[in-house]
Structure formats: structure tokens, C-alpha cells
Image 1 (cartoon, rainbow, N blue to C red):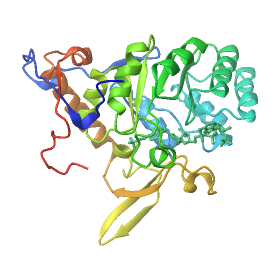
Image 2 (tube, protein in one colour; image 1 turned 180 degrees about the vertical axis):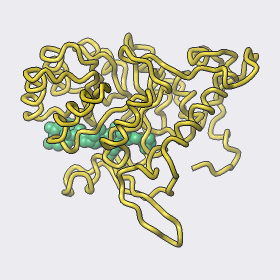
Image 3 (spheres, helix red, strand yellow; image 1 turned 120 degrees about the horizontal axis):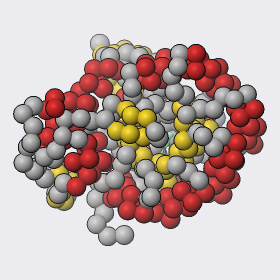
Length: 327
Ligand SMILES: NC(=O)C1=CN([C@@H]2O[C@H](COP(=O)(O)OP(=O)(O)OC[C@H]3O[C@@H](n4cnc5c(N)ncnc54)[C@H](OP(=O)(O)O)[C@@H]3O)[C@@H](O)[C@H]2O)C=CC1
Ligand SMILES: Nc1nc2c(ncn2[C@@H]2O[C@H](COP(=O)(O)O)[C@@H](O)[C@H]2O)c(=O)[nH]1
């Protein structure tokens, strides 16, 4: 692998502006047969999304993926979304119970519009088996499989039937995979995304390592159809994590899905817990993301998100922040 870089090593090069106002720029994206306001999805983690946030996002034309850590709630979740005429987007694992769960969805005609197989090491036979199982029983669900970090993995999961793949092993803010195992795309996530996107014949979700809104535009430039984000969505008023107060400041918890806090035991721990500053309303962040991405599109010299995909870029190794503290 040559040309290894990450988000902070890249700047996109401006092209001549064709709009009179950034408000003319359209950030929407088609993904899995639906149109969404942003190419962004909050991470399917327990301190990032819950049923209320999922409902809010679906009602307001944002993509969401519900987490899989309260498996017993998934059937009711799908039913509730149906009653409100909203799309259902759930996560599954690959353990034995999940096979029966998928079959029960089909038997009860509870077909979610989106299903995500959410596994640390997605380039594996259990994931390929689950892709085939889901495609056999729920062929109409749009199936996202991950996580992976190589073109071989993208091709293999696509070949097995995945409709999209999720790229990112170890770049997450609460991830310790890179430290505990020595493996992953942490530190070169953007280059890994580029590498995977070149091999992909279906959409890719870039997952993890987004620290600024500009990183969303960079992900789109390097091949992402969607960008999954945890830490920037943590700490909102609506976020499920506990709130604490320290030195007069309100903080909210954000923990990894493979952390001891999630698992309830100290076994194969590859995630940690941290506290992030309380951020106010989720919609304010979504609005700011949209405005920033509209601005990105204007700098790309276009009116639509696709304009970003073809802009020039330069590699400016570790220098773009000039010492500014942004995270
Ligand atoms: N994106 C990322 O970088 C990472 C994300 N995570 C998140 O943590 C959560 C838990 O993930 P995960 O542990 O996969 O889920 P599970 O605990 O549901 O494990 C899924 C299955 O995969 C096996 N498994 C897990 N890791 C490996 C591995 N490295 N090699 C071989 N088999 C493995 C498990 O067995 P056994 O446990 O016995 O090995 C189990 O049978 C998910 O939400 C995942 O997205 C976790 C780590 C990295
Ligand atoms: N290695 C681990 N990765 C994890 C864990 N829990 C979640 N994740 C991944 O992180 C992203 C979010 O990244 P962020 O940089 O935006 O905060 C999430 O979507 C997962 O892919 C974990 O315990 N270990």
C-alpha cells in the first residue's frame, strides 16, 4: 500500500464557485433506494442512538441504524416504525440466535428496509454465512455488512450478497483495537477508504475517525456514500449516555461497543469509555453539518454532493491544523 494518509493530512483544492449562495447547494444522497438529507449516519452504538433518536431521524429524512445491544426490543421497534409509516433500520450480529431472529422477521412479515451486520472483523466466514442467510430470508432488505478494511474484504462481502460495505477497523474515538491487537485502519482510515472504494461496485460507508465536519467532505471525495460518526454525535441533550457534572461543566458518557461497559465483562475488550462535553440539541449539529457540507460543495465548484467526488486534493502531512486545537 502506497500513499498512506489520514484525514488531517489532506486538503481539498477549491474550484470556481457556481452558486450565489451556499443555500443553493444540495447535500442530499440516495442510499438503498431512499433519499436522505445528509450522507451521514450516527453510529449504531448504545450511547449514540436509541428508539427516540431513530424515530426523529427517520421522520426528518436522515438515515439511521439502530444498534443491536438490546436484541429483545428489535421486533417492537420495527412494528412501531411501521405504525408511523417510517423506515426500519436495524443491526444484527452473527451468533446462533440471530439466524432464528432473521427467520422470525420473514415469517412475521416484518421486513426491515435496512439491516446492518455489525461485527468487529467483518471479513470472515460467519459474516458471509449471515449475509447469505439474510438474503435468502429477507431479500428485499438493503443489507450493509462490516466492518472491513481491505479491497479483498469489500469484494468478498459484495460477492456474498451485501448491498453495501462498511469500512473502518480501529479508527474510532473510543476504539482500542489498534493498541490491543496492532491491527486496523487507525491512522490511515482515509487511505483505506480510498483503497476499498476503488474495489467496490456497491456503496461504501466510511466508519470512524471523523473529527471535524470537513472530514465528511473528505470521506465523500475518497469514495464514501455514507459516513458513520460516533464521537461528534455523542453528548447531545437527546443522547442516551449518562450525564455527569465536573468542575461546573456538564459531560456525557460515550463508550465503545466492545468496551467492558457494553459487554458487562472484561473479555476481549477493544473499546473504552470517555466523557464528552454536553453539546445541546442534536438538530443543531445536523443543521451545522448541512451548512458546512453546503459550503464544501460550493468550494468544489458544484451544486450537488457529487461535485466533491472529483475535486483535486493535496497531501499536507500533519500540517492542516497549524497547531490549532480542534478536538
Ligand atoms: N469498527 C471497529 O473497529 C470495531 C468495532 N467493534 C464493535 O464492537 C461490537 C462487538 O463486536 P464483536 O466482538 O465483533 O461482536 P460479538 O461480540 O457479537 O462477536 C461476534 C462473533 O465474532 C467473533 N469475533 C469477534 N471478534 C473476532 C475476531 N477478531 N476474530 C474472530 N472472531 C471474532 C466472536 O467470537 P469471540 O468473541 O468468541 O471471539 C463472535 O462469535 C460491534 O458493535 C462492533 O462494531 C469492536 C471492535 C472493533
Ligand atoms: N475498536 C472499536 N471500535 C468501536 C467500538 N465501538 C464502536 N466502534 C467503532 O467506532 C465508530 C465510531 O467512531 P468515531 O471516531 O466516530 O467515534 C463506530 O461506528 C464503530 O465502528 C469499540 O468498542 N471498539
